Image (cartoon, rainbow, N blue to C red; front, top):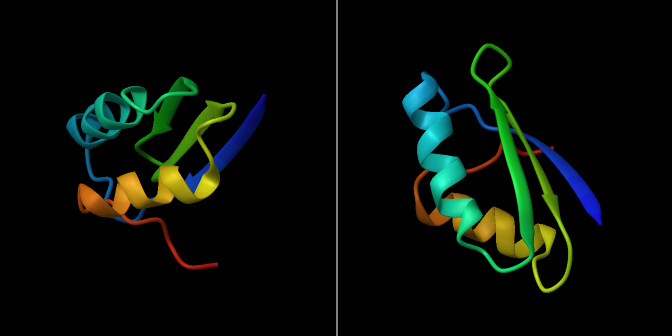
Length: 69
């Protein structure tokens, strides 16, 4: 299992985190999603077939793109 932490500048409230959790939880292979509103970040636990690319694509699709590194 892999873990991915992403900064999401668009997070402004607990509702934003919940929307992200709902969306990412639907991806096959995602086993857990947690978020921190104050840090504007999420952590995703996943295994195949989910990947960093599929997680980022899902976030971009719902208008919560991660910050560029």
